[in-house]
Length: 490
Image (cartoon, rainbow, N blue to C red; front, side, top):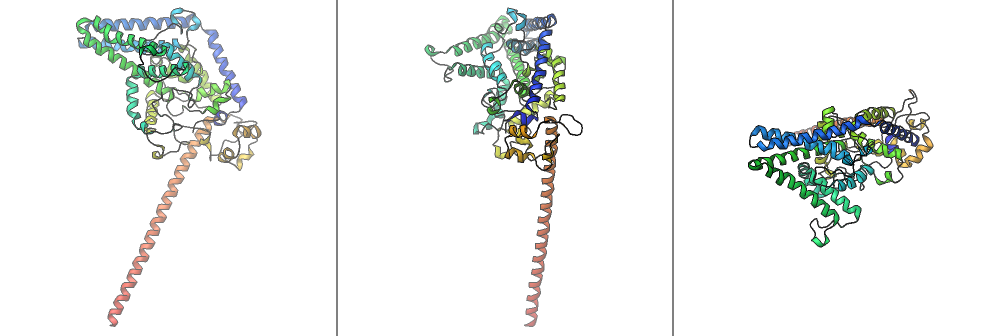
């Protein structure tokens, strides 16, 4: 169900993956060596623009009893909160601007405009998620503990409510992330998870930090700023709540589009146990997804429209992801790897479908765990002929299901596959992207074949039924003729 051997799944040899890792290391070094004033100017201008937008929004809300002022102030505040959350808080806390040695724009000092603390988020996200991306039972961001996003997780009756839980998570995303990070921090510190509101004498440090920050956020948005606008406090309160909701929904959509559409693969602990740096890079590439965005949408998403590049280089400045993406695409073409991307709407709808589909028991689902669109593993290619390669005469008589069943995949590759993925005719690499396309075509042909078999079976059954009906009719006619003959003879 999940990928246990990334080399076999990606149709790359160990030397291919090592070469891929070296090329990605080169991309990193090139960006690091070119960082300078242009990048520093970008982040400082972004901070200034965000603060101006927030100040303008809050100033406008003094007149929020008027509809135009409420709409304008709410819009300005919403945009300011999104920029602060996505392009500033998230990226600064990743250490993307630590190279500047500016104490104001540093991952150790920045505190973002969210319910949870930056420190707890960094502990849960920067380490747990980015180190163990999409590894089952190791990456807590895989469904955030409340959503079943892969069939590798056993279905439970509580999963039936996850469509509703998903809506609550979207609306209260900052609280969901904050509580998720609090739990992760407690686990890392060995602090008991029970009791979010323990007696004061056993109040743990993670709880105290959480409630201090949450209290400040609630007071700022729902008490202090509304009170400052005097008679307009009610409309200001509504504006602040709306701006938070808009920010939450946008952050939720961006995150889900980057982690849960089709093509964002899942992995087992077996894959991680002996993982090389090149395999870590490859796991980030295969476990993430982008969405298409122009400069404005990319900026508003914190450049997480380039989620693949972010997972490869989480601490490189986000304003460089667009140029990095060009080189990453070239590497995907070179090694015949998929580069998972699509429109924002498409990527979210794929994640939305998975959320609702996996709320149901597996036996209610049409596809199996190995050929469902939202999941892949090396078993996806079982029963499907693999691409040919030099010295691959063995494949003329065998298929993937046989070697997956009879051989340890890695050992088999070492013995039989010295030029893995090279087309014997063109000399070009044939890797995962080609294999996935061929698997899709094979599955389509298999489905058509099964439909044809079903049609033929139905036709045979109809023919049999008609034959049996004719025999019964003939038998009935004979019986009637015999009865009439007996009556005449009497």
